[in-house]
Length: 170
Image (cartoon, rainbow, N blue to C red; front, side):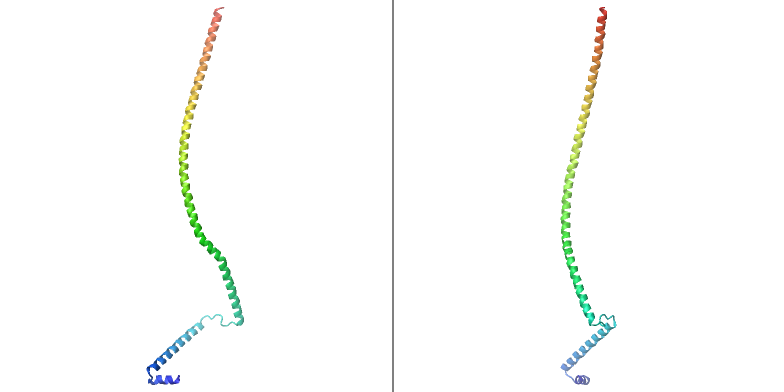
């Protein structure tokens, strides 16, 4: 290294030597920059550097526990994920079924309204017919009562005439 530096100081080197020296300088600069970064890192919060070998076993146990917890979490969430996938499909099917039943309800609702209208019309006609029949019954009862009254009057007249005939013959 000393000889190379003396060449660089003299400025008598060839192109190949200059390239080698430039590369060496760049490497030295790169190393010094890395060392500066490491020094900056060392000045910040340092985790785990002061721990002993016992801590390494603890770390391995902790990592193992974390792995098991993650595995358990994956095992329990996997069925949930499948369920969520099927949920969208179920929602689509339920929406189709709702649409279908809504159409059926609308159709039958229209039929029900029409049947109610027809029933009311027929009921009104039957009520009108019933009223007419009631009126006819009342008229027939009045005629019957009138006829009975006439019969009673006729009976009185006959009785009077008979009593006159019987009293005139005496």
